[in-house]
Image 1 (cartoon, rainbow, N blue to C red):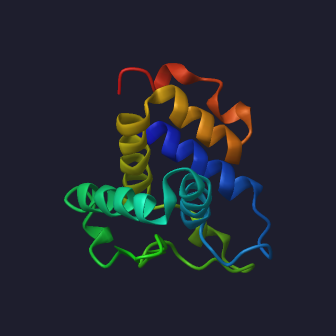
Image 2 (cartoon, rainbow, N blue to C red):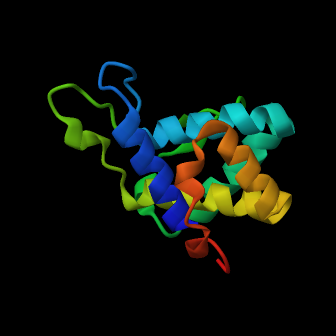
Length: 138
């Protein structure tokens, strides 16, 4: 799941225009997941999954200690604001990758791999998912 999380974040970092959003690539991935999955499982369902993912990620990533998931599912305390001057700020931390990986892992557990990938394909192009060997068995 970490590989998939890293690929999604890298895709957002490479595809986003600096003036398009002030969110980090990790927050763009999270928000796409929130929008897509919120339609499927509802706001409360997504908030519950995201809160659990954050709880699972915190012991592995102390950098997430200030992070929280609001009642509407939005993520606070994660990601760095990017500027046109310093694009290096958009590099995800290990904690951010772990958080997205934990969220994807929970989705795979509760929805199954096929449905999870189907939902992800609605938000990202299929090229990201071509190499599925790295996700099998994790």
